Image (cartoon, rainbow, N blue to C red; front, side):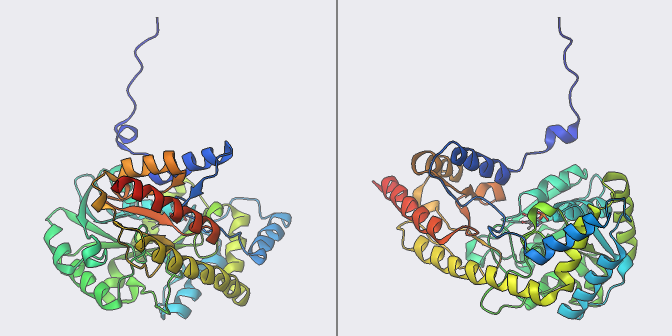
Length: 397
Ligand code: PLP
């Protein structure tokens, strides 16, 4: 007779697996089985890492950069990160304020862990990146969602933020450019939100993972640079995954006020230690060999911009769909509520009938929408929207 299994922890029972990774995996499994699938689910550039970055990591590997390194990152990389913030935003920080972590996801999680305790509330604007609520729960805190739908361009207003704050609120998470909507807050809009956070003495986690993926000559805003008060409370997260097509390398960055940076480094020292040592030399090359990196980014952005416009135009031609033009990242977030179908059912049927993989808005806390990544080829976009149009027409019959 088998004994009754002991229950797992509350952490593992309460955590939800990433729906985006799950749908992407399902779509890829269909592809592997020989199906002709159009995959709009992936959240990563379809470009390879630029050669000079790969080469630097190979050289480092051959040179024996295979040992433990300092937990918060190799000194050269922390210094290069400080230098790039100074050059791009006039933001001066000390290398001790920088932590290099195994992927931006972990940077975000450590940021939450550094400031949140059980019982605290964290304001998570929706549509949100799928991992924020789970990170907050894993810290024992409670996510409080505030939905900003397409009527406000998926951007939270100061009044919406203010209304969600309670005496338990400790942290607000901002993410501009946004995954999943591609929305980009203007500097003025961020100043107004930061003013509310300052008034209520909240920490801010500003996830600027997509800062370099902005269109129409838009300039991203670095939240920590908005004021002295902003700098004193902002945990600034960014990384190499999206800008440099380095998703598999697992390298993210945090810049935070010194006491928070120290706490994050100590947490990381017990949870993962340093990012793969030779990989950090690749990241260093991405920052140091500026011209080569800028050229590679330009190629990628030219393609993303073309696809963004193509997908946006094609989606809006479909009766029943309305879609805002995203200003950043590589996602569109069309409204499909007119079909009167739950978005998860819409996606499941679309994959089954037309072999098109998209993520339901409800995975991001916004029922009635879809997230489509246009980090895929023009051909897939063209073929995929033709199938989506056929599917939508069948729903209208
Ligand atoms: N933040 C946002 C908004 C993201 O979309 C992602 C990745 O999808 C991350 C952070 C984490 O990036 P990384 O792959 O470096 O963990």
